[in-house]
Length: 65
Image 1 (cartoon, rainbow, N blue to C red):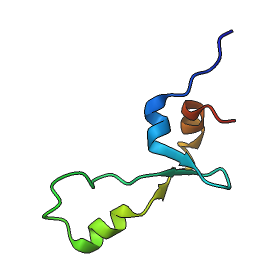
Image 2 (cartoon, rainbow, N blue to C red; image 1 turned 180 degrees about the horizontal axis):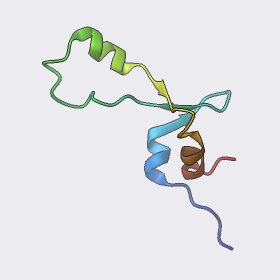
Image 3 (cartoon, rainbow, N blue to C red; image 1 turned 180 degrees about the vertical axis):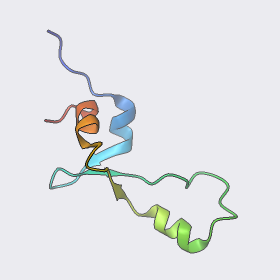
């Protein structure tokens, strides 16, 4: 059986924290920024965590156990 391959698109979007949680960037930060408040844009810069229901799927894409 061949080796599992990491999905490269997922590897660019997600990082593991020290406690094996999955860190992600937030959406809605790429364009149409002039109607968004500075507070909202500032909060979008902070990293978020992947929801618990999605963790098994993302870990499978990343190839981590």
